[in-house]
Length: 304
Image 1 (spheres, rainbow, N blue to C red):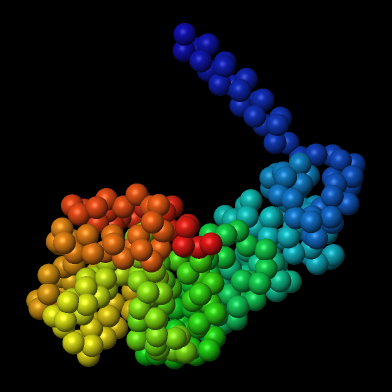
Image 2 (image 1 turned 180 degrees about the vertical axis):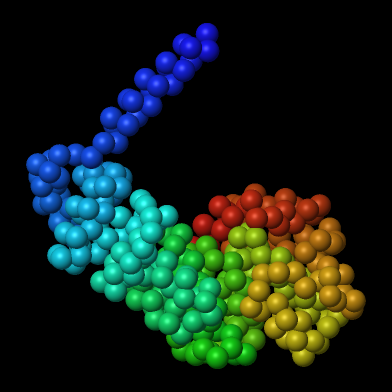
């Protein structure tokens, strides 16, 4: 029985090896036009079919050709398929220098982690105008928006921040929605003062899993009931402006509203949500507010 298993494993390994063996030079040469076309009409399957998954082909054949012809997508695909190969990052950097959006994002992340924020931002600012998937586009837009929006940071520029915040808010980024809720409520940063719009931003942030926005709605209700004044409201909300983390644990003056909305407060929130947002949404009524990150898909209705 053991000998049968060994033989079977040997046969399977031979089959697997034969499937990933390098193509012949003739086969690779016929792929050159396909790889060239993928520089303008990107198709990831092209690289699978043309031997990029084979390390020998990728390094010995495609890398020199891509460098010579400045094929940014090809250089990025070589890196993506063999990230652990020594010196492979050279191809990532070259792809980024040639304007490959995904490569620019990865280089930007690396610079960001090295605390080279200004350099990272330069890469991000170019990458967001490129061909990124929706999730990556949202992440990068949101990261830039947060850097420009923070008045206590070195990159504060509200004129740059606002369009990025609004774009990121529609790309399912929770923090930008929370910030826009605050700016709208107080008429800050060039946003017109509009409590209804503020509520919508907070509500979307909650549906995307932002505890700080849940707390902000708690203070929204306290102010509505005139239990706190506008100065206190602003002070408490600004403490929740640039992070979605709950700060209720550090406050002794108020209950943690993201955990203890009363039935009447939930009823108020559902009333506002249904009146201002969409009367057809199945909110839970007077017993629970149903604030949780697994409701993120419900935020789509606010992105239209």
